[in-house]
Length: 249
Image (cartoon, rainbow, N blue to C red; front, side):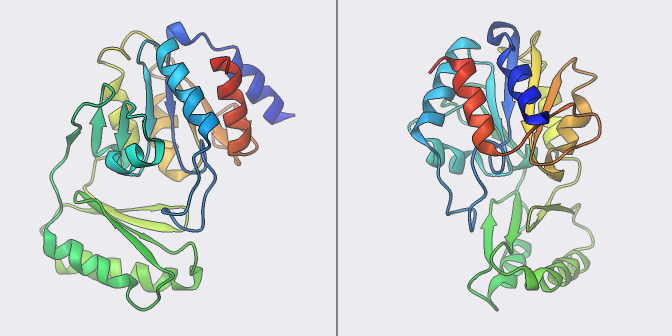
């Protein structure tokens, strides 16, 4: 089975020669009713902490979430991370992240106002981007898209684009992607000179899958197949099981 092949291939990786890169929602943890209603198992924290040691620090979360939110989710761990789909990067545990410039406050306020018709809608104002979530109210997708399109028209001189994800829309700066950030990450210690291994699960991870061949890396997906990705885990629980096996915890 595909998930069996994924488990076997991942657990054969040599952490001493690899850089381990993980998307979070839908990859390491299960998708919750909202971005703020998710669970991080203690066993996952233990596996990540051990793998950080085994890779000599060459492990990073690669998420759409801001790094501050990742720190809250995975506390007490403060892992190396790429946050905001590439808008933030932290090379070493606990350092202050580098980040791109924020969107105008008035634009962010306008975008956030889209959630007012229904309390089931949610938003994340990350400063450098705004994410609008409709997991609990999928019937509002068209409303949110129209609101975002109007916002882009109101601010024609701002360089912004829309990134779709799982039941969400995110307005952000163009050219900021997980793939661009991962390519830069792999030029710097302790990641440089290692083989990158990435696990992701949705369209926001495609830019990382795309750069893996040029970096000599290996890709795994979760729940669905992507072009050029040979291994597919069935669900995040299988990823967590593979991490625990590789970490020996």
